[in-house]
Length: 117
Length: 112
Figure 1 (cartoon, chains in turn brown, cyan):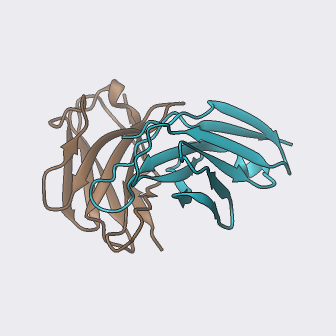
Figure 2 (spheres, one colour; figure 1 turned 135 degrees about the horizontal axis):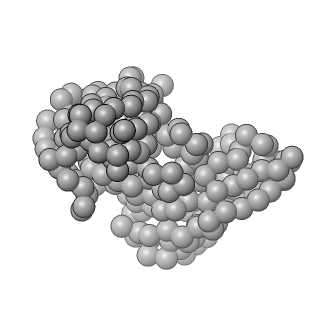
């Protein structure tokens, strides 16, 4: 149990296009999901906290109009990178925790490798 | 949020025990300590979580001294497949206020 999936696993797009990444909790419900970005040989950097039914909370320095987050249900959050540029190329990872769990063990998705040409 | 400090890298050999220590001097009373493992191009994977003293599961042990200002992840008899980056996180695990924040992590390389 406690599986988080991401789709797509890898995407290559042209500069200026938009890319949507899906994060799903497959066998549990999550009121909160987190979105991270990881550059090569660096740690995970929190981008935003995605709250079901409400607006996402963005970390300082993350453009909310560029990285659109939608958390439409307790099992799905999406991250849309709008007008992507080469500097947005990175590894994007989401995480979620079971609302019923006593301890907030985070379950991470497998990540999405975005390459912007 | 409590800040953590870990060694950047460690080397070991197959079959040895590896201990990775994390410093978290300003850990709060309600904070728990959680360790994750990450392989290249994969999401982090939960290893172990604890609050005080010692916690053991099928893959690792976590030692936390009385002052809780540090913790040590112990991996018994490592194998080549344990080569990964290990992250120590602190925070209150329950409720909506928990935001898992990652430090730089420790890159463990296990040699044959």
